[in-house]
Amino acid sequence: MEVEREGRMDSVTVAVEYEYEFSEEALVKALDRHPETTAILNANPNGRPTGAAIEHAQRAGVGLFKLGELMGALNYTGDDFIGY
Image (cartoon, one colour):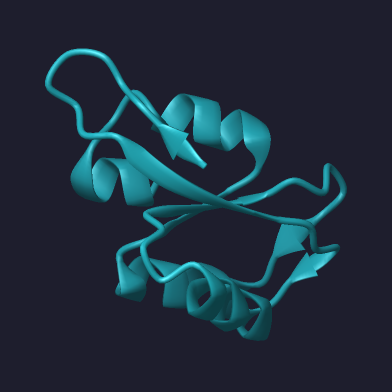
């Protein structure tokens, strides 16, 4: 899914996944399926990312978010976006 942002902010490519425990393995699979992604949305409202998944996402330069987090992160760029 492509999210176009206003102003001088680049658009964001979001991969939508649905995991209860968003593990590092789930992250790697999502990145394999969507290599062009700049953010991964875990659409499961009860889902939680593991620490390993968060660290791997940051090293890969990809944001890993729940819906509310993604909405807030869209106001930022670069490391501020990824680490939101």
